[in-house]
Length: 238
Image (cartoon, rainbow, N blue to C red; front, side, top):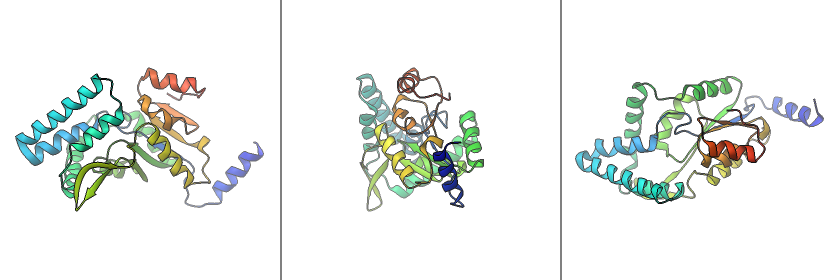
């Protein structure tokens, strides 16, 4: 064992109750099989606004598809998505998020089993789990509670007088936004070596996050994500 490794291990042992390592996990199609944002969009607007809400959600989906077809990036799509929530009361959005989660969870086939099993193993080994997602807390809170995630690194919608404005605070949690969030959380745990940490993702936009840790895992078969890791000369634990 190297001297540096010995020093790091001693520092870790000297902090009772601190995590042995951090695990960063994307959510949609990495931890859960679906795109939670879009499913919740449909659920919320139909539940709260009836036929008008269903038409609104369908229109948002059509706009998102048009952005993708035109070659627009995830940042553009993310901004469009959150504008669709302008005027909605945050408290009701949160309550609806829990109702959506309960229904979706009970239907089965919700979790990516291999990812969920890996996260349980990490927690048993003393890790802290961080969900890292372009989604927002209304969707992620119940999922984090069930999985035992200590941190939610996500997009933060702006709220004024208890109502969503349609804007977001800071950059969305996509691509480089995920890298910055991972680095910030690691900085709050200086005894944790990034080389000991793990990250899970399914899309090339997760690459910046995966490159920040010593143990990146690709969920699914994204050729672009696999190639990005290999180009960076990183071992892929897919």
